[in-house]
Length: 102
Image (cartoon, rainbow, N blue to C red; front, side, top):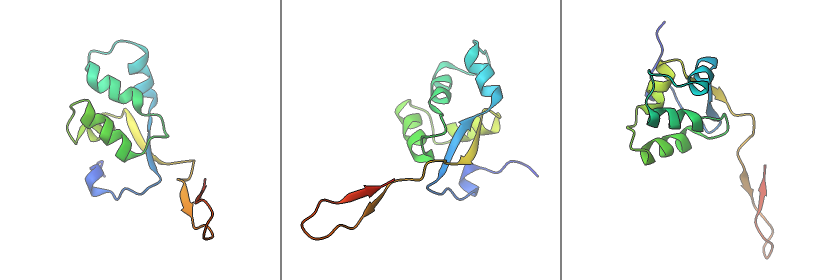
């Protein structure tokens, strides 16, 4: 079965990307198969930033909406569930400060 597009797979809040071993090789040496801007985007993939954050970084770099998908299709990044749950706001008693739970 072929790889599916990011748009075909539901993205949930706990989805992040990690770099593959191949990506590590690309970043460790100058690779003629990846340009400087995409290399910079690849270097921001750390297993902590959400897909939304990475898409925002890609847009800021002038890359199109398919930049992450291209890196995934080239085998440079892969999707995993985040290990740190997102923060959520707790309801506080009247008169007290709102609290955040991690």
